[in-house]
Image (tube, rainbow, N blue to C red; front, side, top):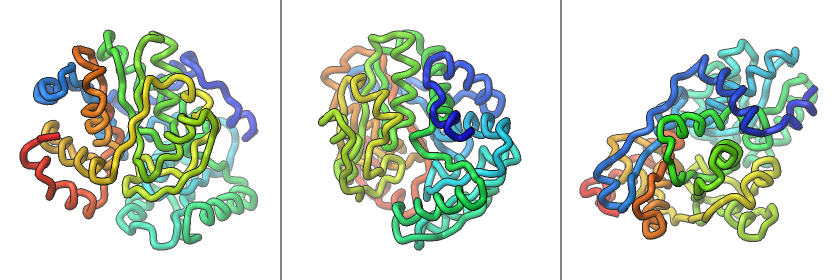
Length: 331
């Protein structure tokens, strides 16, 4: 049963099917053209506001589609590990379908994020000093209680659900030329490739990741999955490894891949606030800084930058909003 879920196809057809499920639980996210950003960057600068979704991130799309399929399988519950958007998505979507959910977080995880996950309806278990140790607890719960492990990336129904975002992009902006997306586990970039490239292969897909958590970038450069240190503050694209399901989809399909320093990621948060009046997390604002680095090759194009999420910590917001970019909007 679980093998069938993990081996399910990822394709445009399945994204279209998933969209019917996702759209019954949430509204399409806005796509907005920003004149000030367009003038600064030299292209038509659109933002896809996934930060305005339920739970404050794109991940809820995948969660809804996963839970829809799990609810038909007679599975007793779900379990995962996360301190951020994935855990919140699993908790929220599981509650929508009446499925018990457990989210395992490392010892000492952010209390504010734990409260959000609990408020969404999941049981939170603090265990392990890092994600590797927490993952062992997830495996034990999955085995002993018969709960399905919802992986943050190696999960086809999750990727198909996230693909609903890009069907919206095509409908909202039929002549889109390029999209810029943060890449951590890779579900969003894989969904973009599976959806946009199937409809219009000439659409350019750019990825962005933190320099100090660059496993996906290094894997893309080397053409194989590698592990790297994972030290960025920006949890939205913090990962120590690329993941097979998503990597196999995007590894040969990216136009380019940008990495950012920690200071550049903070600057992206500040610029998002100045130019769009939106509160975003580090991964969310990263697409603005990536666009700045890519602006010469994007001149005159219709470019969609995605704000992946809004779940920044108070300390992260405070640090970003002390920067000059928050007051003058300069890159």
